[in-house]
Length: 231
View (cartoon, rainbow, N blue to C red):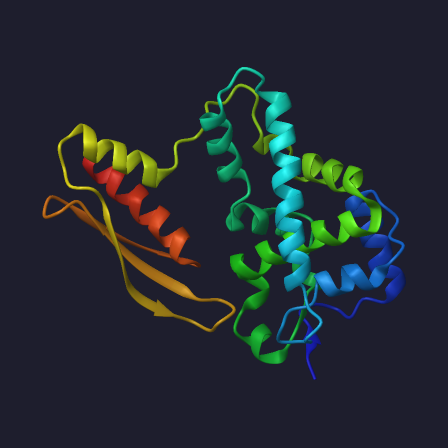
C-alpha cells in the first residue's frame, strides 16, 4: 500500500491547509485529495483534474495578461502566457504553497524522488486548480492564480522571447541552418524522466541540455546554444 510523502494529514488539517492556501472553504475534500494523489498510489489520481486545471490556469492567466497589458499584440501576450504556465513554473508555485508534504505517493515513486519532480509537482498544481474550479467555480480559481503567481506577472517587464524562437531568429538573421533538435538520451523512471537533447546549427555550432521533458530539454539546449553564439 502507498504512503504519503510527508505526514499523514487528518481531514481537518487538510481542510485547514486548503482554506488558508486557496482562501476557499472546500465543500468536497475528495476532489482535493484526488488532486494530491499520484498514479502510483491509486487509480483515482490527479490526471483528469490536471487536464481540467491546465485549461482553467490558461484562461485565468490569459484574462490577467489581457487586462495587465492592454496595448500588447497577441504575439507578445502569447509569449508571456507560455512562459508563465510551464511545468517548471507550476512546480515552483506548488513548492511555495507546501504541496510536497501533502502528496500521496506509492513507495517506489517516493523512493525515486517524485515529491521533488517538476513533472509531478507541476501536474499536481494544475490538478489542484482544477479541483478548486469544480468545488468553487471560476472566481476562486482565478483569484488563487493571481495571488500565487503574484510578481511573476510584471506590468513593466518586456514580453519574454522563447529560447527556441530566439535561436531560430538568430539562425535566419545570420544565414545559418535551421536549428535541429535530437533526443540523445532518456533516463529515469516513468514519473520523473530525464531527457538529453542536442541542438545544432548544421556544422556551425551545437549544444546539449537535460530536462524533465523533451520540450524542457529542447528549451534549455536552445538557451545554451544561443548564449554560445551571442558570446
